[in-house]
Image (cartoon, rainbow, N blue to C red):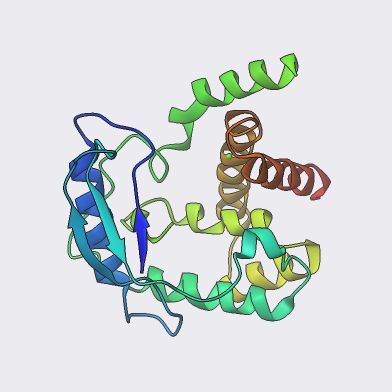
Length: 202
């Protein structure tokens, strides 16, 4: 088993934990890939002031750490997963938030902040209807040029959708670089690698 603890506290934390549990439950068993199965939600208490959740443990290596960027097989698996998730019934739901998955232009201020910080020196719980191009960020977070092209071909992405995917990946990666520089250097390094791939992409 594994425990998921929110990184921030506040009024919306319980709703966030419950939404992540619901999303994980909805995804579990719907693809050919194992995904965590939610088991319980814990209450705040001594040593943990926020609600938390328990889910099954998945054996394996984190793709962001093992860097399967040159693997065509991994690109094919990623495309298969994205296609399966995109085919799931949204049951009439639509994206209502202001975060990732909505209007990319709503992130201009965040990107400007990232540029300011850069000049001085971005889980199954997010399953919900959103901009389909957001599914593509893994193309730059995880893949090198050849497998990235294979992923695009497998998903049949046009230039506009692919361009939006690049923009979402840049928005995430820039934040990862500076936001996690001290607290999570591995995430910061992943962001730097993604920015490098985006800059090298033609």
